[in-house]
Image 1: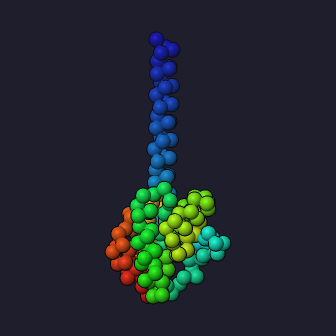
Image 2: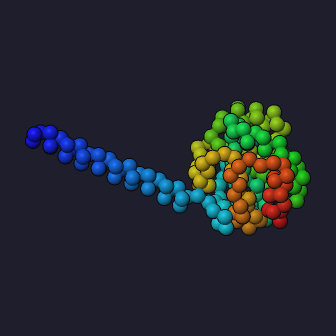
Image 3: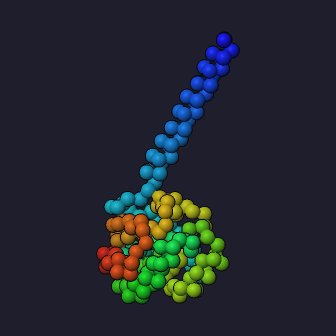
Length: 176
């Protein structure tokens, strides 16, 4: 009986320790992500990313303009659907102080370049090759669009694909 009782106690102790470790890990991850995420009313984190043509885009260089900052991937169906709408509205708003930055998340240049050519996109498509900007903005699901006003403040975050009408409404909101 002594050996069985000792094994039961050891197994119980191991299970309790594992349970505590799992709970701590979950708690640490959830609170860490909450601290990193960008919220409405905050200044948008600055970044520098390079687009498909090799041009560098620094978010702070667009101060004075509204920025429609979209995170997307070629594999994402709602992203594919909203890209032509974004292009149409970009053509209407680019001369009115609204800039589109469509940040691609960790895909190859060949895949993204092919997508951009196929859809005739003319707005900048910076490449977040290592996911640092994605992490800084707390992006988990795609597409996500951050509406940034002329002062660099995030005024809204849209975590879904948008219709052309909705994109137009959002560009009106950030137009300086």
